[in-house]
Length: 412
Image 1 (cartoon, rainbow, N blue to C red):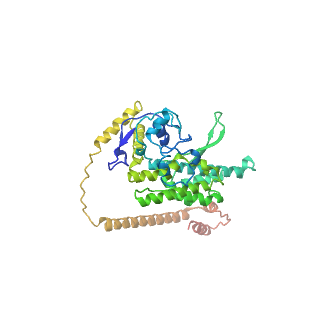
Image 2: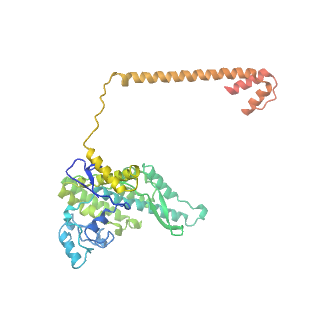
Image 3: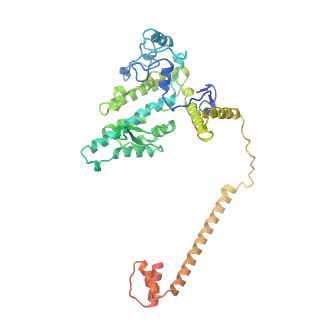
């Protein structure tokens, strides 16, 4: 667990995140699940999984509402209403009292996790579509003729973006294939690389009837978020069109069906604009610093811990780094003695070295040639014919001079 001060300049670095506790357990990126548990609500797959409004999951695909429809009564939630629902009726997915009394307007979506969770859906749809395409092609083929050509093409396209990516089939308890697949969980940096480079590599990797719209989905994925009013207004319109484009593919592939519009996608359209207007942008609420702090803790555990009390080691090292963060090593004084070195002298030095190496190579070639001449003069007819045989020449010539001429022509 850690916290950051939003008015500090290093909120996006690990130095701006202050660790107060370490819990040993499985690493997870389910931010929404954590927030729902914190507010005493059911999981992200429940009927009313949105923290900020009471929309039912059947209607998350509906993009016909105005921007503030879900941010105002009667759709908007409040902390008091969550407490009341949990205490009396347990409706709208409220089952327990909130653990912390945090006003809902102070709970802001993290830009990094928003991007991660939405691109997870896009990546899974690509993988599933490639697997299904391979199954269609292999349907009437013998087992020895079946291939994973389309899946391998997708993996190659992702790897060509500079991202390490693999897909594998999960195994049953008996070690056999389960028919379900999983793929490498990608970090924020990897997802940004995919958003930048993958769209141009998808042509021919996915089916023609999906290709154009899927590529547009990846290209139009909303990038940098700015706090200006004009940007927020345009952002809302672009986000709505993105969800509509997503749903337009439902007739071709189930992965883009209306039921696959997640709480993150709904929040991206109807709640993020409100957050940006209220807080003058959401960049300062980024979880990037937290993620970097998590990476530092993991590095400490793997490289600087004796593994007996890893949590204690992480806290001690983190506190030591925090205490020394204001101290900086004084750079050694450097005085340039020759101002022309990098522009002229270095080039001349390298040119001389190159000429010297070329001269040495030429001399070596001459010595080898001279040695070959001496060896040819001392070889017997039988040795000359054996040498010619190595070059694929068989001859019955017995004249020494003739054999020497033939052997020299082979050498040169």
